[in-house]
Length: 104
Image (cartoon, rainbow, N blue to C red):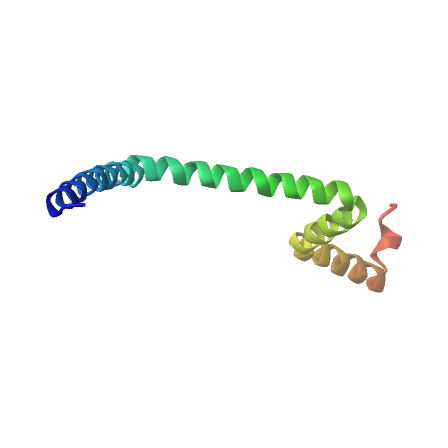
């Protein structure tokens, strides 16, 4: 191949590669546009929440008794002060004999 032919082939290859690069650059710019990134982020968050919900539903189906025990423990933890107060009042009433006077 002569030098002139090799040069023309190299120039043509450079034009093709430049075109491919510019196409890739425009696709990248479109991909990282703020609106597109926001939409992608929103879609990813929705997908993660749906996956987590599906995982919870599957876990409850697989272990219903463990789930019920955990939920009961959580509710008891949230209501620990009212329950403790009730038990304390009952204890005080039992010690002082107030129950004997309740009926009349």
